[in-house]
Image (cartoon, rainbow, N blue to C red; front, top):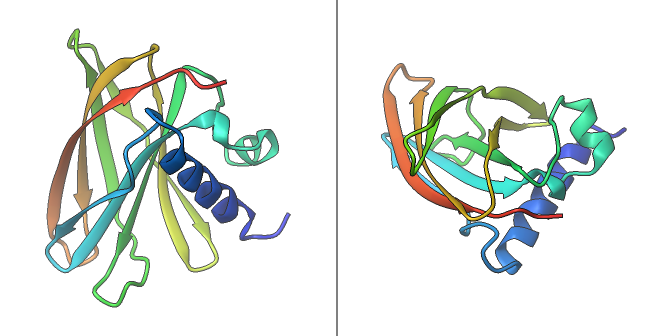
Length: 147
């Protein structure tokens, strides 16, 4: 499998998320010092089964993929340490276990998030950036079952 295949599937999933109502917000980003942090949540069903298996990502209608990437001032992917939690409206927390995926020059940080249909989650991401600085991103996401 070519090294850029995961990147293609992730991009296809992200593009599909923009066109499907209620699936996910458009890609979001936050400036943290000299770094731009992009983040999005998409259904895992957008991933092809073989790609999900290769990277140890469990697909299912009750699972979403949290995708984070960090770019430096030149727009070059930058390594970071990403941790996070998600809490639903009942206050039930989940620790997000991010794994780093490198595809050519791209670097992604991926974590799985379990959810029920139409469930709202408050996500809190913490980043340690290459220059030693740190930052936090907090956002809400409503998640839906996708077949």
